[in-house]
Image 1 (cartoon, rainbow, N blue to C red):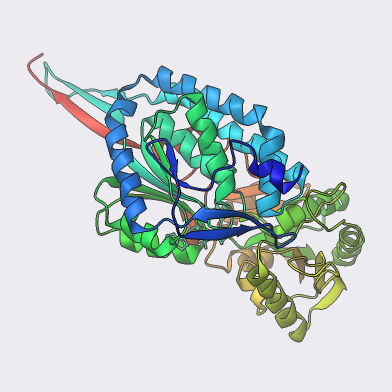
Image 2 (cartoon, rainbow, N blue to C red; image 1 turned 90 degrees about the vertical axis):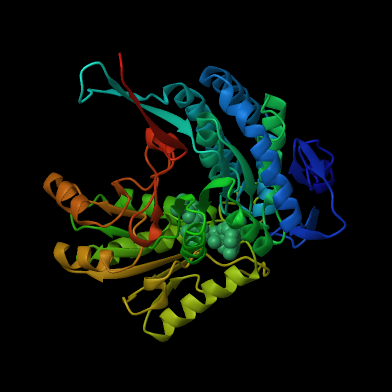
Length: 484
Ligand code: NAD
């Protein structure tokens, strides 16, 4: 499918969305294909005025949407889920074209994104309250659940569909309306999903969307008393700013922020499984994943074995345009991302790391980086302290369990952590000791709609997915009844 064929589809929207209508603006910004540099869309550059329009539309739509029965909202959500699945192939191509990840991964993300809509279509019917034993005769206390109101969903470019539906599924299920602000690198994926939401029966004004002038959009959202909640996925630095700004109007906040995941391979691990897990985790989406491993800690007795097997497998990974057959590692999102990877690799090498494979840009040039394994890494290197967000596996040696747990926790972040061992006592001991919201044990994947997703420390506030995801969009109202 050519870019032209993508553009000719009715799901390809480039305006801003208010009250169910896509509006254009004279000022636009470019959305690029990160594999080729080609401009694939000129998108309306929305700012303060358009954001205020969007908030007003969401506020107007709120009373009717919350008044629907949970079952009515559930039916619409379920239809949305079906439409996303029906359009998987086209949506996958769109995502690969604007985000870069290989087509198979993009289609996998479409399914993952749809799973949140399906799950919350079911959960919509379970926003149960409680009846509390009263303190006086002839009285009752009821705690009911109500939607928080208008929500702002601000999402990143690395999972442009799943990060959106992980918020919109529970928000709509709860009866909230919203304003969506997707990342400027990848607004088209979000816009396509919103077009399907309308087709599924989400009423006009319930979901509105703006992209473009991030500072103006953010300021308008934060200044609004009508926006009662911010649900943000992105970097810790921006998350902190939003939490500070939310204090002015005391908005509720959910923050899914950055990580610095450790991956510990103990001496009793199944090394082949640990290598396979390492590849699947680290090189998915070219390493641009919040739960990507940043630090591989390998017990000294299996270090050589693990790093040799890992380097051999990594050097065989096919890099290229995600639309091409057999490609498993696509481009990074933009030149600044390549620069960050270069900076981390150069710093590590200057401080004594050994390049076991890769370590430099791919010969394709542009945003492509060779999948890299670095050995002999140490904790003072930049890549030990900050998210590299690229296809670089940094390997560190360790000697004892106590030492590695201390080093794994020595970061302000706490999103995901992984370890491989066959020792059951250690499974529970280390799981308890790791400061992390999610832990993979002999398992490299921690993302599913069924399990709570979120971090501790500076990796965030709140949980998405699972039964907890709905709670984030509900307020508790307590009714004290007397004279019964
Ligand atoms: P980012 O923080 O730069 O941007 C995220 C979103 O916030 C984008 O829509 C961006 O336009 C917007 N934004 C930027 N500055 C803003 C401001 N001042 N006010 C309001 N909005 C603003 O992050 P990114 O580069 O798009 O995404 C990568 C980061 O996201 C990584 O740190 C990654 O770990 C994190 N992430 C976390 C999760 C999670 O679930 N914890 C999931 C995916 C990505």
